[in-house]
Length: 243
Image (cartoon, rainbow, N blue to C red; front, top):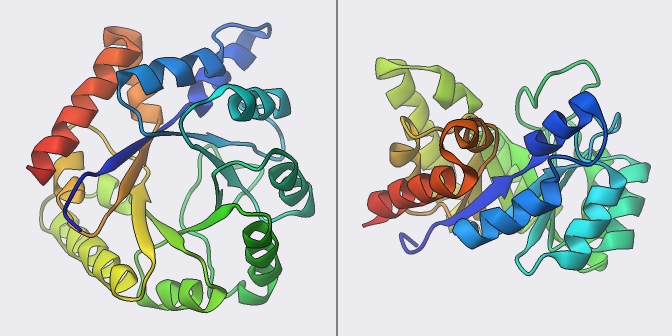
């Protein structure tokens, strides 16, 4: 606790740019290699039902070629379960998914969907895949994760990222309390969504958090400064927060 904080880099939006025109460029797998060289500790990729960015071939190449862990974000569907078991990523983060949403809009309702999620968590675990649940920083959702025997939760930081002033401070305390509760109950807490240079330090300073997953902001900054630079600056801010 309060030691090294891992950085997972989400490469989805490199694929978004590629798919806007078709063809092979820019290649998200190349981006994953560059991210690893710049200091990323893992790569996150969300294979959506509509394949709007990452594709099945991307997942196959990432798993075959990466030397650092691959975290597959996936909906709780039989199709995605079969893909995960076929490729055996290091981790699978179960996320809510709506076809019409631009990005993941909130945390998974692990408490309300307990019976639906239980067999997915069990089958992924049996396959040797480390399961994470993308949830709100809420005691009820953490309790559901405990009962589901998920080893990891990732807290949705989107609400924190869009607030300011005292409202943001209240949400930060909620994140910190949730991380402490998860850690106390043997669950490794991660966090992500909407994190930027301007708001990452207070979250990174939460001592129980083991990993932050950041994508859209880093890819956007890379347009101006390059991927190595954007990741190294984020890495430096995270290290400063833990210093």
